[in-house]
Amino acid sequence: TRSGVPAQRIVLAGFAQGGVVAMQAAVGCRHRLAGLVVMSSWLPREGQSLKMSRASRRMKALFCHGHADPVVSVRRGKEAYHRLQTLGVHAEFREYAHMAHDFCPPELRDIKAFIMNAVPKWERLHTAKSNPLVIEGPCQKRADHGIQGMRPWGARFLVLRDNVVAAYASEADHDRGEGVLAEHDLAHCSVAASDKKKPGRSIEVSDVNETSTYYHFSSHEEREEWLRVMYESQDWQKQEDQRRMLMSVQDVPNMDAVVRKGGLHSSCLCLPSFSSCLPTLIRTSRACTNPSLPVQPVMTQRAAKWENLVFSG
Image (cartoon, rainbow, N blue to C red; front, side, top):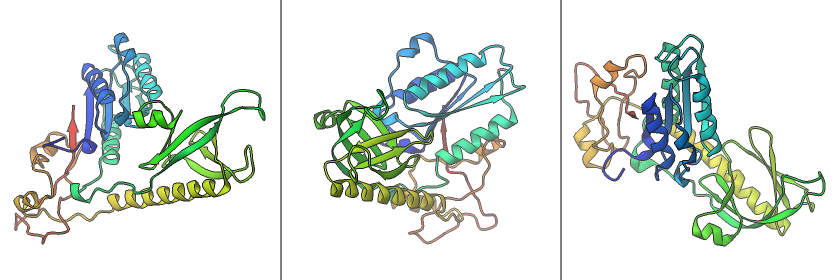
């Protein structure tokens, strides 16, 4: 990623044994990848001990498998899917009724939809923005076990960064970069005030499965400050995601000028042969342009439009 395509625009993909390599490379990658696609693959027994890197937590993944696969059973594919889920991967499993150890049009359509969602249509490197809302501090968390109404509360150190709330056992664990006990992606969670333990001092965080986690703060003012920052972080991230999806696309400008002025990276190649080789998966549908530069079409008789997409594996 130092001199090539940025990691957040790379999707690792593999079929069968290639899927094994893609899974092992993705979970151990020290950079945040755009996603992972695993087709008709499995996870070897010796691979059960693999560990997820911090950067790869919450990575998106798509598992595709044929129900009639005589080489790799669906059971083995689901084992790999569940294993990566336990490591923190946001994975989805798709099964195709009449597909063997092969591809099928519905599978390719699902893969295309996944890639188009994981990798923005077009994104200028210098326009990428980081969520500016950050807050951290001590609190208490209610235990998930014990008698209802009598569950104990333990010390935690909360950190909100990049729209994700991470809970550490202590501030020292956070400083060392280890000991993450829980993570809540606010893009997939709801946040609300709660009266657990003491009125006006707790926050309830609920995930998509309607599982609630309660955090208690030392004062009402501190709780309100956390709520404010959380809500603002959610709103900012939603607007930023919409901004990226709605970025304007125009005809191809002078690519050399774009590269010289820090636009599209020179290693991001837009080749017509790539799209012609995979017509079912990817079609040439959009153009790459730099809004800060005047549009200077390279071809006058026919406007060329390309899919600026990186698909590795």
